[in-house]
Amino acid sequence: MTDAKGMQELARPRTRVALERKVINVDGHRVGIATAGAGVPLVLLHGFGVESMLYAQPLARLTHLGFRVVAIDVPGHGRSDGIGPYPDMAAYARRIDRTLRKLRLGKTVLVGHSMGGRLAAELAASRPERCLAVVLLAPITGAPWDQLRRVLRWSPPALLGYGALAAADVLATIPLRSDFPQSWKLSRRIVPSVQSMVTRPWNALVTGSAILRAPSSTDVLDAVCDAGVPSFVVHGDRDHLVLLNTARSTARRLGATFVRVADAGHSWMVRDPETFPAIMAALLDGELGAVLAAHGIVRRESGTPPRAPSKLTFQIEHPAERRERDEA
Image: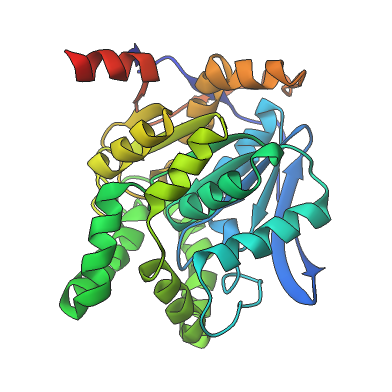
């Protein structure tokens, strides 16, 4: 197991990078996107009930690793139109797929957080030829999640309790005691998501229903694995919404590299914007960098500005190391 503690640092930009927000028309539907940088296309799909701009800080930092970041508001979130009264997860993935085709990004690194992780897996399964790699952050996939989803679907008390836990997680994302400037920035970005949930509650209900009715995620993961899409699963070991064993199950199913983030909850990449870019930098030094090189892609990182270390530590576990541990 490779220990990345204290090793990876992210170059902080000399000038502030701001994501450009706009709304595009995709088959007659409004889709909100945010973009920045130049280089290897990296597409982010966000979690349930929020919008892409909540991830603006880590995305801005990724541009200095040679990525062109594109964050898409999932249908019914942010500036994107909803998708109808009774869609399934595949319908969400198809809308995103058509968005990517309109943007003409070519092969991309797909990154998905939580619900976005399931959508990224759906896209990688249906369009593997357009994926350089898929990076799943606390994805709602894997056999343990499928079991929990069935419980939540048929038990209203369990669903209510899970919803309360999710609300508490959102509040815990804001570091009120430890970092007031960061708390202020995150609060301003969370407010639009809360306003959207209040003014358009039907979109949350439709999306939540699609998640609960989704078919087994293991079939999707098997399709990604069979297609040979390079995969990475990143998870906080204090995630109470999607438990650590769920992420390990996903990684085993995919044959993926697994990254364990110490003392991190469900939305750690938002709370500490330095850590995910630091993880990506470490992966670019290893398997992800080899994937890009195999496609003849040369990244161009931006300069050597002052460095800011990530606040969280992480460990990278390679598939071969996991097999040796399981066999021991």
